[in-house]
Image (tube, rainbow, N blue to C red; front, top):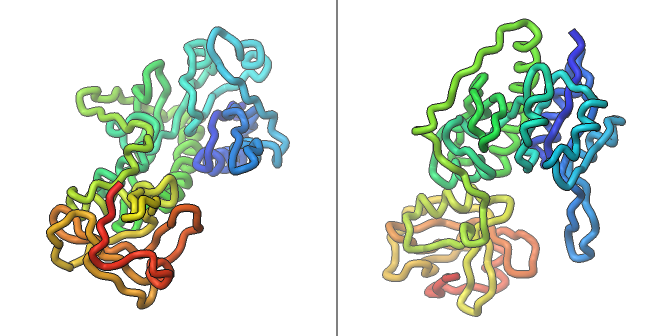
Length: 317
C-alpha cells in the first residue's frame, strides 16, 4: 500500500520524527507544514525551523502559513490529497476542515503519557515535577488540545541524569518509531483507539520567564528537578549579590547541611568541574555548571576561579 503523508511539525523533535517517516518504505511525504521562520540572535536574522531544513534538503514541498483558520489552506490540502496527516510539535491548533480531510485521520506524537501533561511543555514539566516515567502517546487528533483518542503509548524512563535535552532526544527517536508503527497498523487494519479519561488529565503550560526563577526556600530535590527540566534551554535562573543574572546548567543533591539563609553559598570547591553548594529549604544542592550574565556556559570551577562568588553570598532573583 502506498501511503501519502502530509507532515506538520516545527522543532528538532519533529525533524527526527519526519526523518523516520520519510525513510519508511511505501511512504510518500507529499508536503510539510511548519511555523514561519523566526528572527534569532543579535542580528535578528530569520532562521528556518529544523523541519523546514530537513524538508528542503530532501526536496519535500514546504508550506509555512501564518494561519490555517477560515479555510486558508483548503485548496492546497486538496491538491496534496494526503491519506494521513502526521503531527509532531507543530505549534498550531488544527481547524476542523484539516482534521476531517485525510482518509486515515490526523495522528499526533505527543511527548507525554496522556491524559497527563497535555499542552505545550510536557517534557520539561515531567522532569520539573520529578516524574520517573514519561513517553510518547500516539493519538488521533480532535478539536481540543491533546484530547483525542489514544492509539498506543510508548513509555520511556526518566533517569536521574536526564535533563530536558537528553530526554527530548530519547522521545524524538520514540516519536519516529511510534508514527511508523501507526502507518503499519493502519495499513494492516490492526489500529485501535481508546478514549482518554479527562478526569485524570493535567496541563503542561508553556514555560514562561517566571517559571525559570529559582526559589531557594523550596526543597533541594525540587530545585534540582527545575534545573534539569530547563537545561540546556531556557535554564533556571537566579541573581548574584551584585544583581547579575546567573543561570544554572547542572545541579545535584548535596549532603551538606543547610545554612540559616535560603540561597546562601555554603561551600565552594574548584577541584575537577568544581561545585557551588547552595542552601535550600531542606538541605543543599551542588551546582557544577553555570552561565554568568553575558558569558558562555562554564564549569563551576572556572566561575569560582574568576573570583565571582564567595562563601556567605546569598543568591536571590
